[in-house]
Image (cartoon, rainbow, N blue to C red; front, side, top):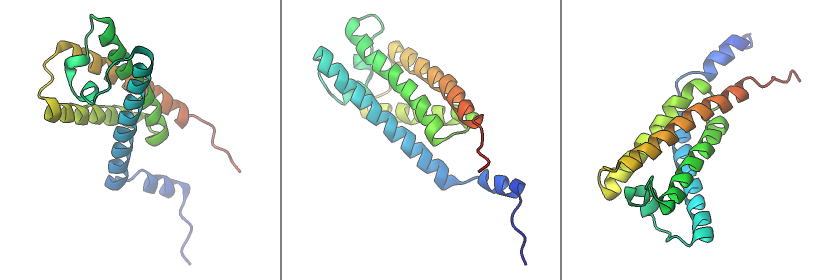
Length: 155
């Protein structure tokens, strides 16, 4: 009779490289990130009357560090990074993978921005997105470590 798998064998099987799972997690985080960013831009439009356009997501022309209107979009990007950190805890659940998934999200975003509107040459764009990346990594690792340290119920 085959023996039941031990707890160590079950843990090893769960941590194996699974490209389909990783791809699904990347797609989920990227999609939800854009959904959250879009909702934030809708909220900003409701309060400020700013024009709603996809350019706000994929071009640097609305991101300005030195104007009030620019900071509306900057805040949306920073808040979407905070929300993406929460998504990391919900979707990825491993603090050691947060850096990888965060950088992947921003590299994919950079490539899409480049394809959509050309290379983002604005320093403001880079400052805000690197700040968003740092926030996403640090908060994501914190939230994931909280998930990992939760007590495991025995029954």
